[in-house]
Length: 118
Image 1 (cartoon, helix red, strand yellow):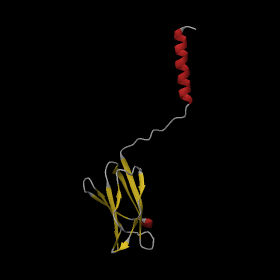
Image 2: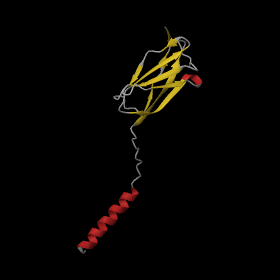
Image 3: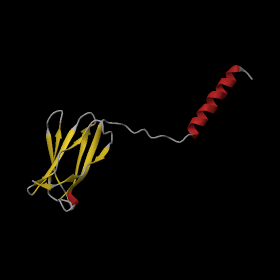
Image 4: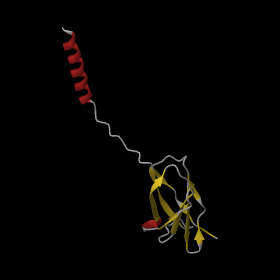
């Protein structure tokens, strides 16, 4: 068999084998993440209307979220190379400050905040 034919046959076979492999989806890492959770009162019930504050520890910018159904909150588009602090307040109560650090590599982090009387 001539050399050119063998090379062509090898490329053709490799092309057919590559087409038979399942396609792999590449997940694009856009450098952002989301933190979500629930604000709970001392009786472990969701605190609807609680204010959750998220502080960017690099810029010291504060974002706020008023909890929805079941006391749930969500902050999206957070940088993965920045630390954040979370805290909740509701009806004279507040939660301890919790941190989301750069060492936490979850794309979707869940942090519940428990309210306590001052």
